[in-house]
Length: 428
Image 1 (tube, rainbow, N blue to C red):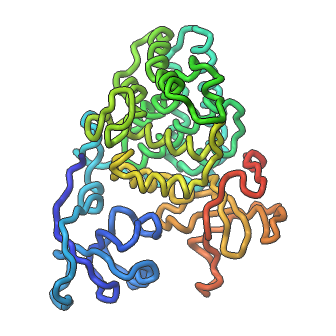
Image 2 (cartoon, rainbow, N blue to C red):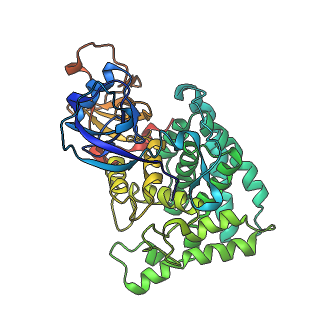
Image 3 (cartoon, rainbow, N blue to C red):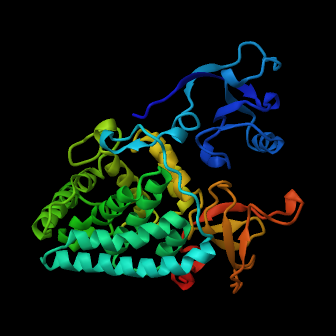
């Protein structure tokens, strides 16, 4: 588990909140608010106003409470952890330890706006997609695989995502793919690179992560299609058969590869279905015994699976998927990593379909990482559910209208196929 800093926090009414206090927890889930999950210092009047809009009480580090603030007696107290503001901001994830802290954390700034990055990302994605398609065909045909070429083909995609991950996320969500296994490999690869970028991993590690994400479920190429496409729940025997895809994938990769598969990539593929509480497979590993790459790929794999149409289940919205992930903290997945994944892609990732407060339907084009509930969107349906034909980008975090009541905001996240929307029509 990550290193934490033990502190004592006290639960205070929001009316007592003042400058300099460190808010380390809320009276509601962080995911339901625009605040950074790692906690924050109160430095501006707007922050106090925002907290009052969402909460009745907050947990504050007692060491940051000014002496001039008189607290009522017998307020709830507890040991807490300034998990990120005091620890994660100055540290990074240790790859060999399954997710412990150590060393200086790298921070990747947004180098180009999404409008500028989209054309470059489109070229990179086409190149990367061709590589993924060729890789799958090569393995399916039993031919030799050149891992060095795969690594080389991955680099342009990594560079684009380092510059601005929203462009690639938007494109991969929009681009049509009939083959679920292929599309899933492509998407998981992109999600997990965005994840690694959020954690500040070096580009070399992002490359390894992307390859691990792409190859994680490749063993399903050797699982009976009748089982994979079954529209009803699987029997115990069928589930056992599907779980063999992990070992099958590694066996086929070993046979086809000219060089030995990177051990870190291999362990990510082998253990990405393990779960934090030990309920996964193939070895029922738990907690820190699961390698970090496997944890990252596992979260990305889960998110992409449930937000995609499968033979036995319709896709759920991104909001529903993130809520499910959040509720699974330290059961299915390590809590700190779930929170970082949400930070990485945003509450409303690029490509999400949402309903706005004026009754219109929009597609998110850029996740709001500093304003998580207020991303950039394009309206695609008016209040009567007729096509708008608009391509104007609206930044929900920066609206010119001074009236808070008239500012647009997101009411809810919608499934990708809501209102019979075909996202492929919006592929740029």
